[in-house]
Image (tube, rainbow, N blue to C red; front, side, top):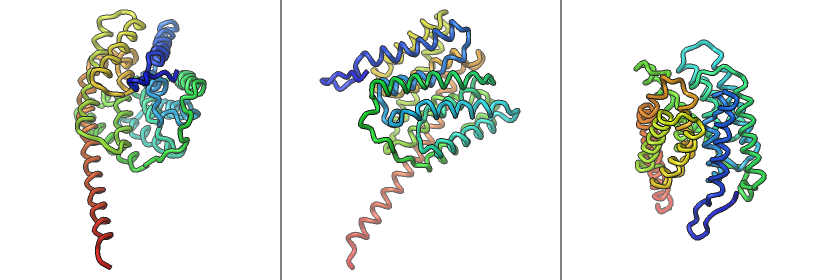
Length: 317
């Protein structure tokens, strides 16, 4: 699996083949068993991030790869049993998930998506938790067998303030959707994952925000167009994955969520599928703009502190 081109410093083809084969196997099982909820869009993102990109933050603690998503899936499914206002249900789910991630000292962002998916697709079937467990356990096995986590520090700094900011941004977005009467379309799990990860970045620029929003919207558009034109889910998923690889190479981005977005067309209610690109665009504009504003404010505050400390160090005694 650890195949790279030393001359180009790029990931080789074998990891892509294995990851995309795993994704197509998931879709094939869904078709064979006639169970749409077997398709887990975030598992596609995890397969790419862990087996291809080898994201340190996602693979440094292999046990968390299956524990965190399974627990958050149970949290989301449990919250979905309650008959309450949808935005309140989503915010409670997000808050409990943040508390859980803090408890296990983890920043595993895809766990957010597995917790939100039951609410997004309105499932109350507890087999969903078992499906998440099986697929994420398989992903962990790939990481361990191929030693992708070797030489990585097991502990990482978890900045809990970003959890609070993430909840605040999510609340603002959900509130706007509720006020406009579109609360049922507010939750696009992969976007929440990208927002959370963007907050963790030490440097976040307008160019990065634009690339994220544009490519996510493009990926959603590809997913909708392909699902309309292609009858076979397996073939549609293959074309989706191929086109997303093209998008990542064309725009020089490494965003695992791009592989999850098209698969939402297989699991979302039909009335939500058609609006997926538009909702993705608006959610990206709003949420990434908020992240950008916060990171700019954070940078200015840090610069002021550095200038203040510099003056103190050179002032005469």
